[in-house]
Length: 487
Image 1 (cartoon, helix red, strand yellow):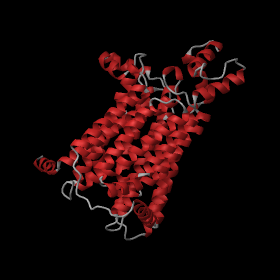
Image 2 (cartoon, rainbow, N blue to C red):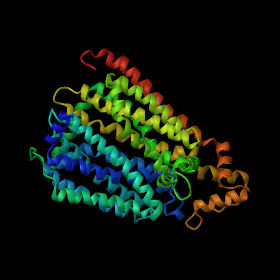
Image 3 (tube, rainbow, N blue to C red):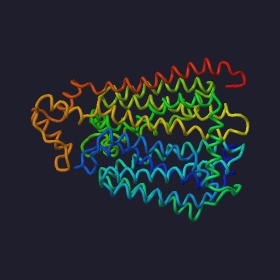
């Protein structure tokens, strides 16, 4: 305990300011991202936008891919113009874009605003990581980055909880106001409390720095071990991101969360009221944010269990568990099984994600660790883009409730007006239920039994299985023949 307290005293003020900014930025990001799939696709009479699943997938996948791709280059801006100055620019773009995103309704308007949010986040990402790196040393880096990772998950947990509770009271606009308010706190922190850590001033031009970055990336990717590994891990991130891209929609459309609410109310009405909605259900984003909650509670335990595993073996084991968890989450309409699936998913994530970063650091040649670590964003970016495709057109054709109902109505010859500005998704659902002489629960069961939307679990889990097989072959035929790689 004394040793840990001694390490804590070594952290300078800027370290804590950087972590505080990370907390508020993650609160803002996940406060939006956890509910974004719902906001983009739910019925317009709820204040949401009523876009199609394909439109949602296209927007979320492309913009988030850009967000994870840009830090490969935005770090050069920080080195050129200074961390503090770029933080202020990032936060001004970030916060104003959140407000803009909450005020526009057209697809192109929301798309552009979300893209600007991503630009602000991409400018911020490399600065905060570099600040943590520069304010720690060999004796403090392990605990320092451990704290940083914990802060990420705390922000990722608090943000969705706040946005979920607030949106059900005040409406969708509060999600964007909340996010912008969190970023406003960061502007104050950057303006008055952030002290630029020591850094070598980059006298190169911006474009020269970009060219150098590209050259370094290509140099790193010339390493076959690294490139093959990164390509394989695209599969993991494609499957992983369904937690945010698709699961909220699936829970909203198909899962009975009322049973969970009633179970909680059975032993504590106060807790049920705190975590549930006025309708006596659990909001999808509250279910999804359990992933971050489980990580906060169990990350140290899981890390201690897998620390003796070789990195690739730990990653393979983790992805096996994630594949089971994501499959279970989509395979049932029972809310309790979905919670179990998210818990299993979180265990696999805790086992695999940290080892992903560790492995890249291990295979990096001496003094090229930072260069290799920078490439870790590439599979995340591509995985987000592909996740958008599976969450968009694929989900829309296989599992989207509105699309399946439209198909069913046409097949049965039900005379229902097309969804429009004056005839919402909820209007369509209500009229369809009336014509089918049932209620909304009965309508859901008819579509569930007719079209089996849960079968999409096979696609998501299959992506994981392919990734596992590829990693096993990689471990056997690529790493097995490289004697200098020590795991």
